[in-house]
Length: 575
Image: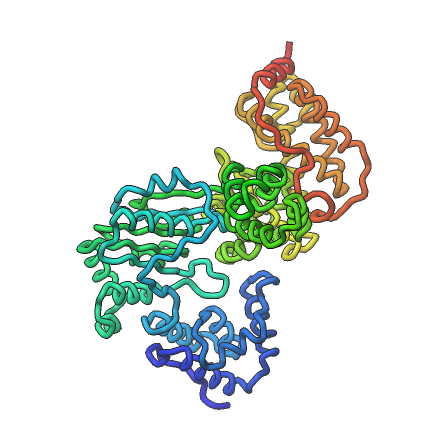
């Protein structure tokens, strides 16, 4: 076999040179077919733990890496090709350094292309008035705009930047950079390449920038921003490592950053977290596209369309455009069409990039949380599902919330944002075998059975605790037990229903014994009856990810006044 081709870090300067080197490597490996290469790449990614749905690239996509005239470079795919061709260890690392060095050059297409004009705002746009007012004044601190995929971070940043520009900010330059932090195909832009583009856009000689190290580029960029009034938008940041050299020290202008990760930007940054639109804002957005008269004529259909789109501007705009293109359809027809689509289909592409960035343990927990039939989960629930200590699960929950895949809704309590649950559910059906799902659900059932028994035991007092054996965690006092019961009774009933569905009626019976009297004494007798039905009605067992269990079987109810629960606790005290 010929000598293994290993490029020097400085030898690759263009995508065409990279394609030529890959062709030489393929010849060294015996010229395997592109179909065989796809199969090998799938095996490489499987060994790395990539989900099955993301392992196999298209054969044309792989072929494109070997042909000239290609501008965009997916560094991860290139390295998977190199590995699939038999290059490992130190030679593979040299390939990685060579490709990375090429992407860092300002004349390469390594991402981070700098535009000297702000993008044109995209219509429709609704709401965000208060947030735009908060950005209106000059402030030298970077502004980080966060939120879940599809919530409209980029469009908000563009409008905020144009508002600042209209007020006179950015007299020495208005720059926009797409950092590709969560791009579905491209790797995150290299900071050195972005800095090179920024410096050239600010008038620095390109040849001089070529010779500067990444550290020297960052220092010069900060000097320029301290001297000049420059307005910069850094869109779709991946993490702090990417941003570290792109943020100014002191600035006469303004820097706006959009990011999914809530932690980027450092402690000195200002922050705005965008939320899904309100019902009134959804109606406003649809009115801009399909007309206010149609919106007023079918308010219930508009609300349902908003719910089906998670009240997210990106999905809403797509749906509104579809409605405008089919005027013969009523809004109710459109809502039925959306309701019939595969669950998670709309959210999947936008969320997949966030999911891929997670550590394997966090991915697993994210998937298994979708099996919880209730609407919310704490660290103890998450740990029970994943078979991990609650403290470890709590750390994963925090990381998932930072990626906006979960939403904190109280002390140590989290819920899925709109549409994300369906995305997670589809993943667990695809990725986790029946046995894994069943083990996770059994852990959850045992957690709720034991904790409910322990809570009722804490209310019963020592004299009668034997009737409610505390097999779960101990509650230090009655107040903490009441707090858990008030927060979790609806989820516990949903868990009991799920237990009956999968043939684990012993857990449904245990929950009925523990919670029945509590529910009746807190004016929830109808729920207690429902719980008893779950315990005594034989069901045909179904799989953990089958049937109607995608949503809670008993809706989450508002937390009621704790006084009835306190009366219940008093009634259980020994006389």
